[in-house]
Image (cartoon, rainbow, N blue to C red; front, top):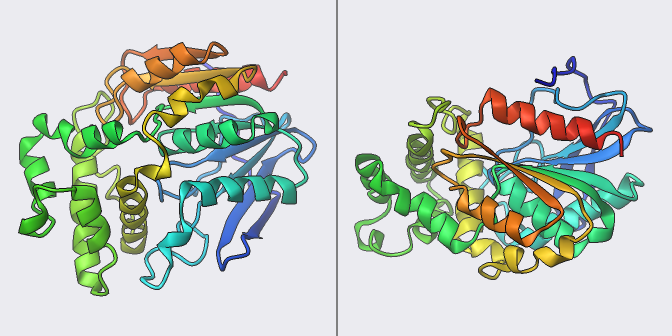
Length: 319
């Protein structure tokens, strides 16, 4: 077990002006002269955790965290119906990361990203491999349509009553079609009450998916204030209904572009929302990546999963 470090407040906070009306919040924690690392949150739309990171040695690391477009402290916020979601795509997010790296004067950084964050760091690294020193990826996803179809339809065979409620959250004439696109349309409705209900229905399903995991936490997704719920679901539905603007299998097919980048992949055996198959396929396609499958963990994590992630971060601080 690797001990957690004491909480450390940011030594720098600011905004990246993306040049298209979006302002991306970022913060830096640790040692300004330390090894640069970028922590990329999941969701999409979850925002950076308010609590300080404790897995990173504040004497050795310079940790950068940011709120992706339209969530957290970034503006405009997706809870505002006037926020233009056409400016929030995977490529926009990759460009924000690269622009942030340049603004902060960082040559190369370690990338950390879990769940949707895993997809985003993989996409960034395949475009900018020369800017990546190492990668740590828990809860591996590549946001293939087969993956999102499992999460929002296939997993319903384990929770049929909860999935029926999720399906019935969209208009009756859309229930046999693309549920993600139907939810995306609901989240663009000018009636806030409709957006609030759609967000609550979506998050209730997310909660149900992890409810039987070894460390599933009740309300893990829905336990956030209403504006954050709306932003989370609006961004999720927007990105997932568009297949994250990635070709199917793109991130696996292009894993060869990651050659020479050492990585640690960590995945829970009982991850109901993101089955371990994707992590296994990525590890086979990426010889520089070491995969750790944690037997007592799901998407919600576990002590053993956390310890494995922290051990990887500790190992990489010496490179």
